[in-house]
Image (tube, helix red, strand yellow):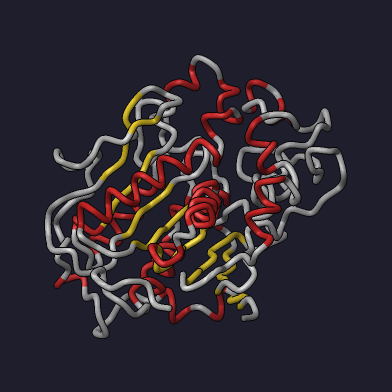
Length: 342
């Protein structure tokens, strides 16, 4: 299927408030409830062995499980909710939006696969280290998805992921051939074809310890420093949107500011050279795309990042993104108790 590039002017209908067709907010089973900052007491404990602590996140046993449960995944250097060491954590608010528009608390789950980020105070280069890689996150996601399925009794989940969370989800699905367990993946500004932050150029300040230590040989750059790393070559080789999973890409329009993929300044961050980890000129601006996925391109998303004014973080906090994701998932066929379609 040809990728559909839906410009903002063409998606007004997607972003309109929900009407009589389904999820009137006055009838929402989650109206008045709040997404918390912990799992139910009897939810399995999943450990992050790199940090030596249980994973953090949210979930609930309140309400019936009628919708396909949604798992929300944050990106690199983020958390599922704001912590003492990270002021972002926007996937909690994303889940709250779903709760306010028809979902039950028991259907909304978030996984924090990098802890509370307080360990960065000891060594800021951990931002690009092994504990922040896809390889480290996939086992936690694998265990978490199975725990959510067992806890809710559902046969499959939907995943809404931002940035690194997108490729963590895709890599787990590939490794486990888990496409029948995932009805849909909403991929928000993910590094599907690499990132711009790994250049060896002296102008790439992300190499500095203060910038996270994204040197060409760092663990994260080993996975994402070019479009042909071992991880990405294998991940994309057999097709970028295997079925029966449904895919929606929501991204910053290629060529507009985005500090992970574009050499333009993005919010408080100046631009860096458009080079891969080998120092070769490379255009990463379309890295977020997935061949075969329905695609929504957004602009001006920096206005939704109140801290750094970046488009890459703002798009996760955007009402356009939340509305589009909710509309997409609620338009799909199938119930929580149904196996994935052929």
